[in-house]
Length: 461
Image (cartoon, rainbow, N blue to C red; front, side):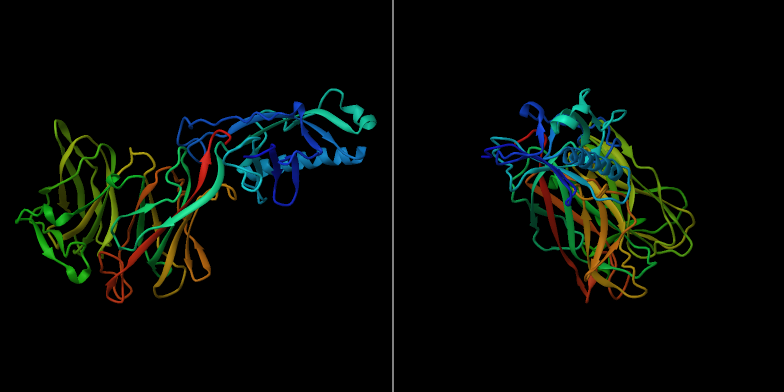
C-alpha cells in the first residue's frame, strides 16, 4: 500500500514533481493538498480519437514555490514548458511525449516504483494551459504563487505494468490460443503482437497477409471450401503438392458466363457482423471470376456478400476479403461464382469468418515486403500500440536487427480477456509462390504469437 501521494509530470528529462510519494516537500504543491482525477468513459464513436476510451480534461490548482523569486518564476516556466510540449506532441510535432505518473495514497496496485501512467495531450480546448491568480504580483515579495490553475487533457486510461505470453507453435493458417498471465482485466488494455517466423518477399512483390485477433476462439471460424463441391461445376481437387489446408481444394470450372452456385458448407453458430476472407487462385489467363457468398440462416432471410472480382493476376494462392454480412443463427454457406468468359477454373482452399460484433476482434491487412531487392527472408511481424511513446500504433517487419515499417493503417487493439485467439493468413513459399500456406524448405511454416499488454485502469487504484 502506498503511504503517500505520488504525482509527477515529466518528458523523461525535465520534470515537475507535485508529490514525491514519500511525503516530502516539493516546489509544486497541490492547492489544499488534493488531486481529483477524472474517470474516462467509452468514446461515443470509434472514429473519435485513438483507443476505446475518451480523453479526459482535468483541472487542478498548484502552489508554486522556490528559494528565490527567480526560482519560483523558473518553476512556473518549467511547468508551462511541459504543457506546451504536450500540446506540440499531440499536434504531431517531433517532440517527445509528456507523461503524467500517479499513485494515490493508499493505492493497492500502483506504487512509487510502478505508478499509473498516461500521456498528456496539452491544454483543454479554448482554455489556457495555466491561469495565474489575481494576486500573482506578490510573488516578488513572498517567493510563491498560490492557486495556479492548470487545465490539461490526458489519455483516458491509466497504464500500469506490461505482461505478455507466447502461444504454442502452430502451422501456418491455423488459429491458436494465447493465455495471458494477468488472468484477464476488467478494463481493456493496449495489446501488442509479434508473429514469429513468417516468410517475407522481395521489394515490389505484391503479397498480402491478414493478422486476425479476437478474445474468443468462436469468433474466428476456418472452413475447408472443398466441402462445397457438387460433383458438377464444383469439384474437389487434390492439391497437396501446393500445401492445401486439407489436401484438397474446391474448383469451379465454368461452362457458362452466368452465376453458378456450389453446394453448402455447414457453419458454426455466429451472430453479428461477419467479415469473410477466402484463399483463392485464378487458373485462367483470360477469365476473371466474380465471387460472392450466400449465407443460409434459420428463420431469417438469406444474406449475401457483394461480388468480389478475382482477377487473372491472382494466379497464385492469395487471401482476399470478400465482404460482410449480418447473420443470425447461420446454417450453411454457399459459393456463387460468375466467369467473365468460359475459360480455365477458380480454386478456393479455405474460407475464414470473423465476428466483428464480438468485443475486441481485429483484422489487420498488410504487405509482406521485406524491402530487399531480391529473394525471400524469414522475419517477424510486429504490431505495437505505443500508447506511452507515439501518437499512433506501428506495423513493421523485423529482419535481423533491421526494422522495416509497413505502410498500413493504424491497428488500435485493446483486449481484456485471459485467453486471446490469433491467426495469420498468408501464402507463398521460399521456392514457389504457388502454395496455399507459407512454406520453407518443403515444409509448412510453424508460427508462434507473442502478445503483451498494459494492465489498464480508468479509476485510480
